[in-house]
Image (cartoon, rainbow, N blue to C red; front, side, top):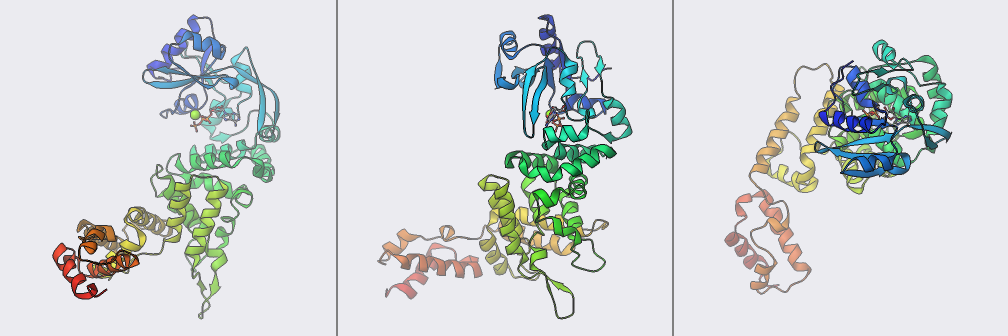
Length: 446
Ligand code: ATP
Ligand code: MG
């Protein structure tokens, strides 16, 4: 079988084999190529120990020598070469591993049959002791060995299962599914970092993240890891419209996979709604203030995941401001005031989020939301006029006030804020002379 790896992979394998070390391509790349898809990272497994690998190649990186992994730089990229391993002891999140002699032992400790393929780059032989290829062709995800035991060894595998099943559109085999559901309560034992990394991979791996997210829900993962999201599926703001969970995950799908923060904001956008719900006078539902509440809850979720401060801030701001658009008939001065409030940095993402949420609510629509398009165009046009949005954008500053003989102090900020207000109404005013004249006539007595 020919899987056409990069030439660098062949070179690395050839050198290792020439030195007497059995070497195989393993993991995701083999799976992806067997499926006929383009592969991500090519990983190699070899009989050579890390020391032996480092001796054989000039440019190496000790990626995780303790676990047997050395990075080999070849053809401008790094490839991981990992010594064959077998599990000696496994419990929960930690495995004690030992180096092994044969690739078969290494395959046996891998999580799913579709991930337990090995392909020999020089002979083209495909090693498939657990019928992973059959499962790939049949569209089935199952663990290598007893599912209950395999999940108990490392509960992260539950989340990996749902990611792979969604990404490759596989059906989770019945025993694997039962074991995975039974293991769900244990996911709280995983570290925040691993949970977050897995969520990010799930959100960014291809367009259809909703398939994996829907599996998260059906497997009972939300209650354990993301309880804020659990009530959304039962929340239907308007009769005849989809529930909030469906809207959220569809909105995720309509954002390009690379935009992680936006995808997170789409996923979390409605978490303030169930707790904010009240009955309005006509008997319908209202969600007054859900955005601010949701912004706070989004921040909680992101903190719990130990996200970076930049990610926490961006995602919670987007949730908080999701409804804060200027009205369609706002005058330009209104748009400038809005830009000052929101901050220009957030504006493009805020529109993208709004478009995605609209898509989430109107998946069948062939048209675009005219009103949003118009507001987006308006914001762009106003921004192109390079309006003053902060006092530092004014044509005069503190130095000019001093030159006019005004005493430095809080008065300066007050004057500049006042000028900014007027310039927001009338951008033409933002020139030195008219502004100095205004200051002279209104503040020279101070
Ligand atoms: P991706 O396309 O997301 O990179 P992948 O299958 O390459 O998918 P990796 O996390 O890169 O996934 O891991 C590489 C291989 O290592 C997997 O294919 C699997 O064989 C094995 N593996 C990774 N994590 C685990 C785990 N928690 N338990 C068992 N085997 C694992
Ligand atoms: Mg990989």
